[in-house]
Amino acid sequence: MSQQSFQATVARLVSDPDFRDRVQAQGEAALDSDLTPLERQRVLSIVADKGLAAARTLHKSFRLTKIYTMLPLTRALLGPDRLAREISAFWKASPCVSHYFLEESIAFCDFLQTRLGGGLRIKYLAEIVAYERANLELRRPRTGADAPAPQVVRFAHDPIPLLEQLLKGKRPRAIAARACILAGSLDQDGDVQWHISIDAA
Image 1 (cartoon, helix red, strand yellow):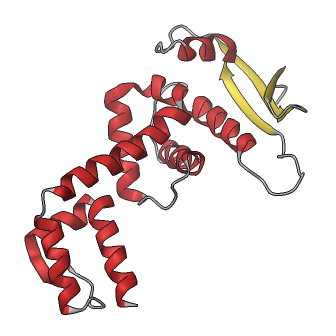
Image 2 (cartoon, rainbow, N blue to C red; image 1 turned 120 degrees about the vertical axis):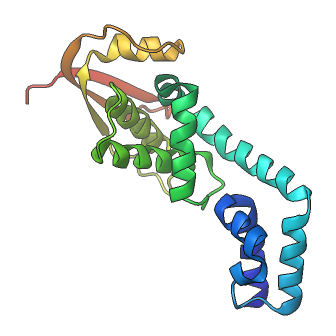
Image 3 (tube, rainbow, N blue to C red; image 1 turned 30 degrees about the vertical axis):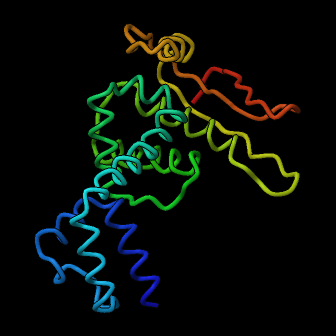
């Protein structure tokens, strides 16, 4: 049990800057009681080592790459400054639990949807996050031959110019209101296909 606690503590030093800062400030008082005296000494040595900063930079870059790669529309809509703030808040709320790009990106979508439900107001964000999350859900690896369930995303604005502008890396402007539904599914080749219909609700 002690070895597992030691490994978890070292991983947390890399992934959780608040924990690292507490250990730097409080020393052994900030450490778990499961650690042996030798393990405590080793943890304090790691905290003082300049290599920890390099490990943290690599970890941060890896997590950023997941979101930048998998959520290009959300990234374009938020812009670099707002995206950095939301990612920072996401990391504080959600320590890294998966090395998979898709799982981390879905978790970030869920975080943004919770923020939107809590009062965050950014035009088009609810539609774009739902669309990109649905795309990821369709591409989620599955065991067996079962096809993923079709995904349905409701748009309040015309999705065609909205998506086109974001795909070009532009902040969307003057997108007309248009209540419609995008239904996504996988074709026989495993490619995602979207179909648009008027929302009659």
